[in-house]
Image 1 (cartoon, rainbow over the protein chains, first blue to last red):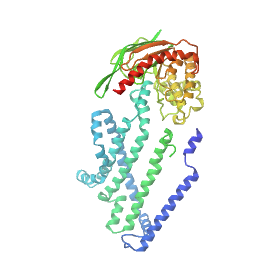
Image 2: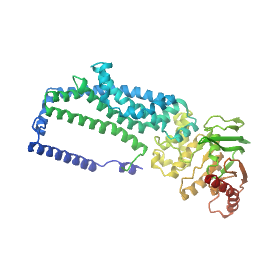
Image 3: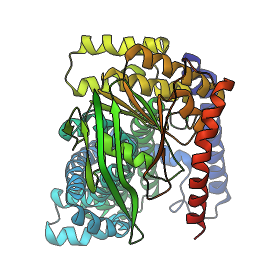
Image 4: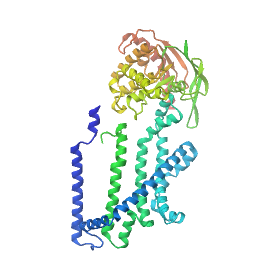
Length: 268
Length: 258
């Protein structure tokens, strides 16, 4: 049993090899960038060198605009995400409870899920205004459907045999929900959560570019306004890094933990 | 004493807009401590009958009485061992066995003690803290049996529980189940399409006809236990049941070709 568990976890050596590969990839990437820069195909103003971007990084860290922007963006994101998780779950449960409602709403799911987050911006500006709540609204609308649909479809896809077995052992009502429904949907809910998070992340940056006077999206758009491509790239790298870190060290970890416990895809 | 009584149980299903009769008036009495095997061609409605006894499905007419009282809902007095085990992958083995006891609000210490004793009986003591994916199919079915027995049901329902097992594992479990039955004196209804299984296990073997199912014949097997698969003396029962079933299987094949 224990061997079984250990063999599925990455060894220290494998982790080192992965890190070395990533480092090598980055080195080659930066090298190619430097070479392209030196060839002078584009003017410096359109394509700065890696060193110029690092300088820009140092500047926006030094004048606090980067750390502050990160803080504000993440605070908005977490707040909006908490709202869409709560409301999305409740609506998903209502879809289960009221079958016709659920079926109807679910038939719109493809349109709702693929709806581009940026397309909410004009509506939000006119409905709520050019303010904090307007931004939050865009993020909430962009992530809520993913939570709602994944709650609904996860519950509907529970293998009936689990419910039969539980009812057979005298489980019903709230106890059935708590001890069977919730654990049974956890793996697929986490996948929905990851997806919703990524939609929310797209939305917040888009909304900040167009609607905000602070935040990561804002410093990106300031870079454009001042024709400062180094700052634009520095902001993009920050956005990339945060997206990667949150997924790897939070959501992916969570999913992996549940999948491991359930014994799903052990040998990938 | 009569433990379970089925009276005129009828069940229809809607299939592509047509009403298909699955059970056409099943009458069956099961005595306390009985071991009844139900055999029949696949798709004949024997599992449906078991689901009705479990309370997971409702008959269109007729009724099933347990200790003289009609059954209407599922309940832990009739625990079921499903074909696929139906263990919960999010729980450890011991927590799976305890699940029903927990639902019955039995205190933690007591339910741990009960489930431990059934795990011991099924020789799974070492695996109490494993998750189900770490077990073989045979071990999973033993956990499922432990889980069903832990509820101390009035009657144990088994729906082709050994169908997915390899033959060595199944032979082993067929012997174990007989020993458990003798030890616990449980009343058991065991559904299978496998004639050998029914001959080895059953005190009585009830043969269902092809759909719409009725009871075609009942054969009493009065033979010492534990019975083994290789026992030559069981052959005559096997052939007797096979003869009865043959025409039903042919009828079934005809249905399918239409």
